[in-house]
Length: 319
Length: 246
Image (cartoon, rainbow over all chains, first blue to last red):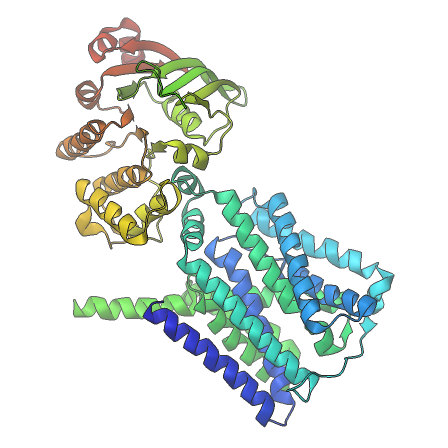
């Protein structure tokens, strides 16, 4: 393992340690409620970037994957009383299958056509769930949380830590992809699909893999939301806001590096939480929109792109 | 597997037809390319040269006919499968991976197309030796967007070389270059041909075609109008008509 790798794993260990420590020391529940949402967006944004950032295929279907995660958990919990870990694992499997199907059907389309197809996916799935009485239909479904597992003394704290684990998983996968042959292949096909094919890159297979991994992570991120809210209904689980927020977080953070969506999700997620408490949750959308406009104009490659540029200029100045 | 006979063609194109809507871009084209050959492909603009290349490399699906490479029918294979079997190409308008450096452009080829499971260190070595041969060693860590036209052309050839091709197709690699640059690229192609790489060269610059080719084929309106030694083809009445438009 090189030096970067060691720093990375020390960083993740510290992050998980801090998350665990928080659950043991902090008594106030609010930080966990808010922190959970931010962590959830970190997973979603990192997962989104695997397809949207590395491969350049803009997916508006985040809410479809997220919602399917929620409802996989709801179904398993209602039918079998499945434990949280099983809910998440099953959601990941469902997300992978969904990603594969979506990829097969749509990845031959390029650019905007792919994006539109992903919006259609959200609508189709939401409509199906709305008409499925067993999981509550349009009215939604109430869920009773089971008893919390040791060492946690509160269910939300546990969900907070579980979501932190998912963040580490998502980031580790994204980082691995970026540094591997797969990342290089995705980057090549993002630049030029025909040239990539003619250089030996199996573009369709790579795009499918990215879609499967991205879908699995998004669905997994959605699964704990059922227990977090103790309630699920189609219009909030499949809310298009997830798609828009995640897209904005990734783009604002920068998609060329795995850290971009992490930074974007922390920045925007925190802002959203602060605004919700101080002003109102409706202002979120406004602020999101304005930040997106500012970044698209001033820093199209996001915060990561901005940092790189500054660094390059500084190095250039010395040389 | 039997070794191919000495005279067996490396690439056999039989009755290849490609239509775009009602327009027939290639009309039943058949030609054999021999192993080790330096093959020039000429013809006026719109005669189907690049279309033929696209059909060989797999970018286009054909309506009829077959492409057989080293005794294997590759007509229905995706482009990357053909690249892995040893067909590499450059593009008429260079298509570098813009977000990457020159070295990374080559690493894509080495990661995906080169068959042997070489170590990272070995692949870097291969990359540097190709870049050195192409005269691009000093540009290894330069972004592909910062290259000059001639450097871009060379990088495209270098990237194609990194896939370990048996057949290299150069699509107007010299277009828009100065005469000294043309010689530079031509010398490069010549040196590659000396290493058992069969080369199909599309070119408008006649001196280059004449100097380079063992055999020349001239296309016009999707049909072969002449094929033979460079002097034979140049002397051909129909070739002169196609070029001079009489």
